[in-house]
Length: 459
Image 1 (tube, rainbow, N blue to C red):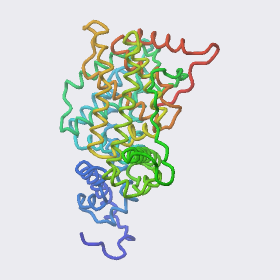
Image 2 (image 1 turned 90 degrees about the vertical axis):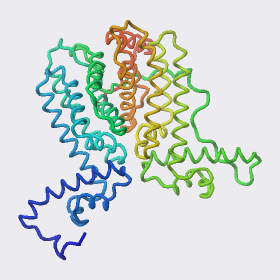
Image 3 (image 1 turned 45 degrees about the vertical axis):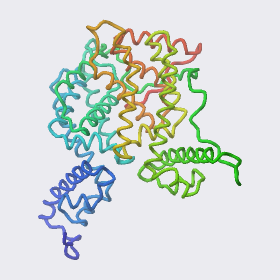
Image 4 (image 1 turned 30 degrees about the vertical axis):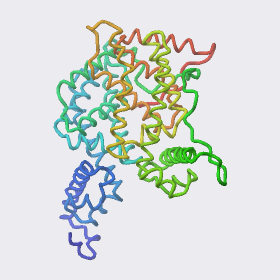
């Protein structure tokens, strides 16, 4: 593309002013197209301007760098989605605002699959700034719903769920389907609305709309006996250990160093040089163990998932009834997550930046956790059985809650145990019975004279 004439950066004619919004829009469209085709890592300025058909200087008239354009594209697509949500929520009964927002989001994904894929999937790979833009958009959508529900009568029924977490989970559910090339079918809409209605409670009694921190329970006795920690560095000199033990020690140190560096800098910014330095191994040893940082990331992600699944399963099978098993399972799960903040960050925040293989591992791990909910279908009569998508929706909402807490670096997920259990039990037991069980568990673990609630953070 030919360069602009010398001094053209200073030209500011009325014609140029009138063309600037069109050029900016073409750049944003180019970013969406390139990111959907090549991922965030492949969405370079060169690729974007080539797709948009504008010059490099023109790009920098509008955006500071590639990430600035990427964030702007997220906000632009979200603004159009938010407009659809506004229209849907305004005409729906106030207490049905969340259902209306869900339906409008599904319609948007059906009508604009490319934009929806960019907003709901590719945004997760763009680093902290992109995640901030993504989360801001979801908060704005949630605030729209919350304002509508506040206009409802006290005895009207509305889903008692954390709205931002549910809307974030909905985007993750759609992202996985769009990634596979699926459209948003009408059956999914009906199943999701039925799932949401299983949380219905009078508006005056809603209690699970925010990320409410309760006092953390006592440490679970069912956690694995060995913690997820890096091994000690071997002493200087030639250690008197078999070669395979030396190699495994170094492998583990590289894996944990990868998690720590990614937690501090993000996956995209993390370098092998930093990982090697943190692990205390030679560069040639890294490449003997792993092909690249992506492979090292995959190894620590898999180890962390195995540890988390072992903690959850061991606690789950210790309960006397299914609701108690859910309580114990998530007590161990949340404490395991809090014990391993670096793993929590790579598992719940960074994995989408790594590439398709890591995304598939995330989705497979979410699917694996639905096994703990299967027994719920035998817990009550079939006439009240939630749809099958409920299992995926519940686990994905829990994933979104942990993601939000991990990004906020709040008080930890153990204090959110009651909320997570509510998300699991209410569709099968009903909101009233679920709340009764949760309140009994909270009362049993609360020391005499202590306050129950630690804090509430808006979602």
